[in-house]
Image (cartoon, rainbow, N blue to C red; front, top):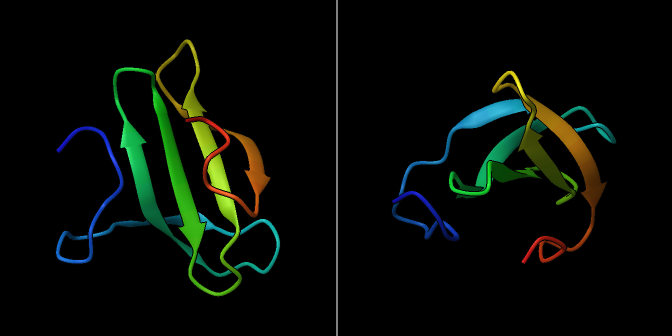
Length: 71
């Protein structure tokens, strides 16, 4: 599955730390066509929005409490 919101039965990878509380992040949504991903903090629920740069590395674009800022 390349795009969309992950359901409970799929595996979620832990990547990075929350910028607010330092807890680990879970993959919430991945869009490979647009080069975007959203990770959610397991403790405070903060969403971290990442996008790919010109070199293909993921860079944090913003963090917010609502997950639908890029839809």
